[in-house]
Image (cartoon, rainbow, N blue to C red):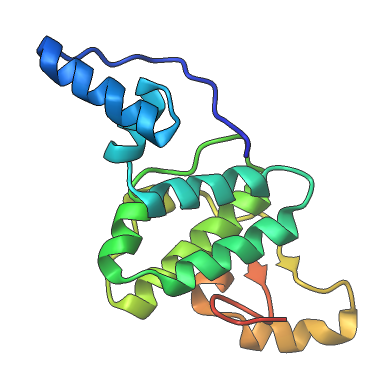
Length: 164
């Protein structure tokens, strides 16, 4: 799993007994104190979302998007809000940023909730991007792409929840 560099810190005041309890719990979990506290504070869906986003910036973006698809398809409305509250981190291409935003917007629409605010900050692609290089398929893609993808100039056949 790729780790984001840690560039900030948080200091909290606690008693010796509290610190000792956290140290013991972290040791039982096989973690250092920072990792243990973060695992207790940050939600699992949020970590899974950010992990999938980071992977999509790497070389095997199709597999990462498939992972993200699987995750977003299984979340409840509350879990989706929690998972996608923070904007994706990492260096994403405009194409990948738009694809992730479209997936999150579609998941939000399907659950009847407003998409996270960060999706509105991502500018749609200047040029259309098609999910197939076959020119004969483009008309089909223009018609069948979900609205959240079309608004971002993305034209795909399969979308959230679909398997190819």
